[in-house]
Length: 291
Image 1 (tube, rainbow, N blue to C red):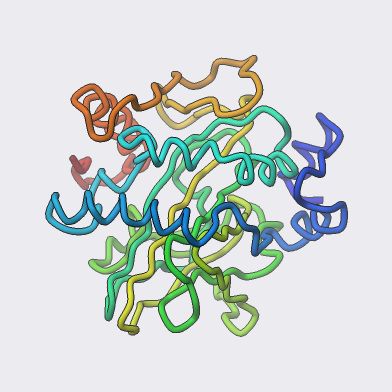
Image 2: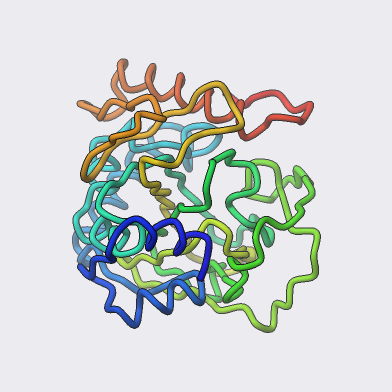
C-alpha cells in the first residue's frame, strides 16, 4: 500500500463519488488515474478565453509568479479549483476534507522548447506527508505531439528519490530539478487528455513532459490538494484554501477567495502568499526569490 493510501485508508472509509473501488485500487497501485471530465467543451473554451484575454492584455502567457496560485487572482480560477467534479474525484483518494495548497499553469506555446524533466513533485514542497494529489486540467488538447505529461507507473512507491537542480532555461520547474536515478522512459505512459478533462497523480509519482513541436498551444492547469492534517515542515509559514469539508488542524494560514479578477486586494494577497511559497521552494539555493 502506498504512503498516501496508508495515510488515507487508516483514517477513513474511502468514498466512491467518481472512482470505482477498482479505480481507487488502481490509483493506489499505479499512482495516477485518467481521463476524468470536469468541463464541457464549451465551458473549458470559455475558461481558456478568459485566460487568453488576460494574457493578451498583460504581455503574453502567464509567467513568473503570475502562473502560480492564480486561484487567488481570478474568480474563474477560484471556481475551477472548487468544481464539484474535480473535488468528488479527489475526495475518493484523499477524503472529505480538502485544501488547495497551490495551483500552477503549465503552458507550452506552439513550437516551444519548454519541457518538464523527470521529477517527483514532493522534492522541495516541504510537506509533512505524501498525502497530496494533483488534478491536472487540460485547457487545450494534451497529446504526445504537443508535449503531454508522461508518467512512470508505480514510481510513487519508491519513496523520495534524490534530485539535482539544473535551473535549465527551458525547464518549466521551479529549480529545473530532475531525478538522479535512471528512468526507464520505455515504461512511461502518455497522459492524453481532451479539453475539459483532467488527470489525478500522486505527489511522488515520477513524471515529466517533452517540448511542443506542434503548431498549437498546450495549456494545463495543475491544482494541488491536501487534507488538513498535512503541514509545512520546511518553512516558518504556509497557506492554503479550504474548498471542501472542515479544517480541524489549522496548519495553514487561510487564503482569501478573490472577489474581482486581478483586483488590488487580490494582487496584494497573491504577492504575499506566492512570495512565502517561493521562499520555501528556493530554500538552500543562491537564487533570488522571483517576484
